[in-house]
Image (cartoon, rainbow, N blue to C red; front, side, top):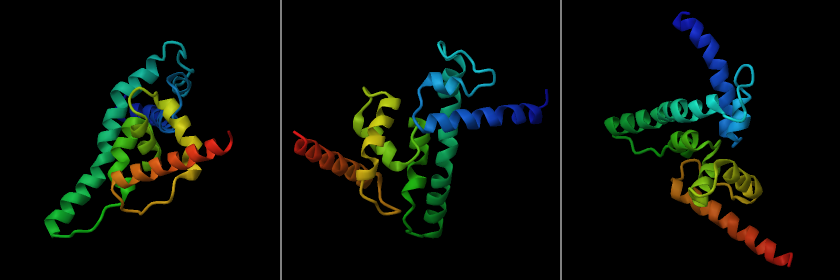
Length: 159
């Protein structure tokens, strides 16, 4: 099999698995994106994807921001970089599809699973205030914490 043939076979599978990873699906659901469905109990292919492919994809996703930062520094430009670009590597690594989702994942902590963190994000997504295009990640975390506070007060009203 040539490299081109391997690429034509692998890219659709990687794309399907990545889409499921980014929306927080568990490994057994990611496994079903593999041709033939894989084994949803052992999750051999999805584990390989998460442990071997996702780190490389996260590295690649971080390159545009690094290149832009280096180019701006070389040219003496102090232009802000969009938060989507600056958080893209972390979002891919953590299985998130937005800076806000990544902020929920980070705020929830490592004891909360990725699918559970996605569930938390889905609960508060509508309550997260809109941020600036070029805000730093700390500002995104603050917006997520504000949404949690608003929802906590809403829950008190239901008592």
